Length: 155
Image (tube, rainbow, N blue to C red):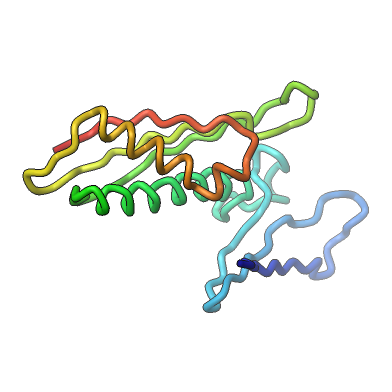
């Protein structure tokens, strides 16, 4: 399988060599979706960054969260549990790694899952579903960062 994303950035006549050019750009995905992107204002100060746009660090955290959720939902359904809603407040920590390079050193997923019906899974089964979802998540398998799940459950 191969996945593609396109990226477009243009200087638009801005000075360049002084490093004061806009980092705003677009990600273009299959189907034509265009997502405004930029460097994080934490990495490149305003106005060279656009705080309204998605930055690569946020996208990485969101990709890990989304991948985990998609596998969690599939596994829960296979086990006979209906999920009414799933929301997550995922947080990534960008800091120096053991080699002194800036890296996303951890991602913490904090899903809030609401189950329906009478076949509610217990805490052990929910933990097992999270574990299996993590093991199957392509994004988690591709990253060397630690990914943890802190998951309260609502019924």
